[in-house]
Amino acid sequence: MLSKKSQYAFKALAYLTEKYNQGPVLISEISTKKKVPLKFLENILLELKKADILDSKKGKGGGYYLKKDPAQVKVATIVRLVNGPIAMLPCVSLNFYHRCENCDETACGLHDIMIKVRDATLNVMETKTLVDLLPMK
Amino acid sequence: MLSKKSQYAFKALAYLTEKYNQGPVLISEISTKKKVPLKFLENILLELKKADILDSKKGKGGGYYLKKDPAQVKVATIVRLVNGPIAMLPCVSLNFYHRCENCDETACGLHDIMIKVRDATLNVMETKTLVDLLPMK
DNA sequence: CTTTACCCCACCAAACATGTGGACTAAAAC
DNA sequence: GTTTTAGTCCACATGTTTGGTGGGGTAAAG
Image (cartoon, rainbow over all chains, first blue to last red; front, top):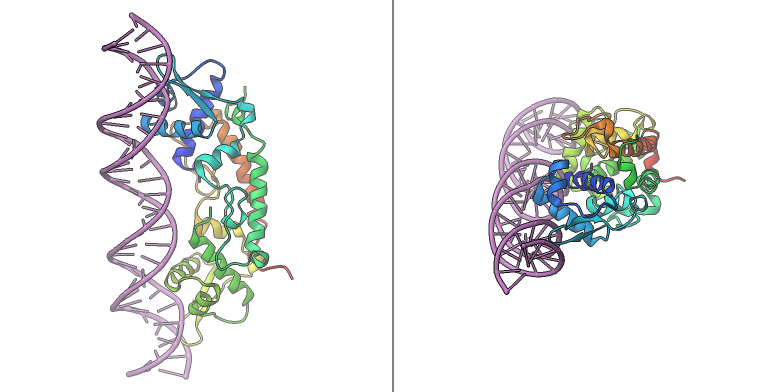
């Protein structure tokens, strides 16, 4: 399951997508509009900034805003960043690969199953972007 | 990611699938062959028994064995049992549904994305069974 | 009635999740 | 140039989950 942090991140990103190209948005505004704890949100947005998804301005008229076109930011990228690996096993992860202990990958049926799960999941997450977070009209 | 517990469960189930219809298998045998901590494994197997996946016999000649044909036991069932929900959001789970707070499902883009992810994942996990845990010959 | 082997309960440490508080810094406004 | 605004950074608190262990109890076989 996605952590609350991840869900908060998506709520914030949805809001910033709505406001894309309309200048910086206050953390406090996102916090109240999306019902996300202010200080927690602060950490999340900072993390997204460090990952080059968002940018920010300090002082009056400041706030956070999307650094890139939301249609170019994949859901998979955000999940990996905030929630961690998408794959269900370390030995099957593209971005967080780690060999399993006591497990021969070439003779592990679970390995093959989880590769299929990963591919099916990525097929969705790599094609959906931030604009898909907004409800259809 | 799958918990270690889940990985242990699958290792044990793979072993019991190999030994299907060959009588009860000792916990200690599974533990040494599959390199799973004995006491931890005990808890896991007991849980699988209570869920009607396994059965056991006490005393000499006792041990654990599969209660059903391994080809009839879906991977999805085991994951739900040992690891928890398969869906990435409570509001999108078939077996563990729970409404999201502060979130209108009908106007939540993430909701729709995660339904697609869930369906893609289930498509694999509902068709794969314990026999798929064994390496192909 | 002793041995074997599963059953059951309680506990434990470490890691992670979910926050909060407070001081600091940069930018803008006055 | 000092005040105000708003993001940055660090530390800590607390609760839950994860991964695991210890020990006694119970049922079946011999």
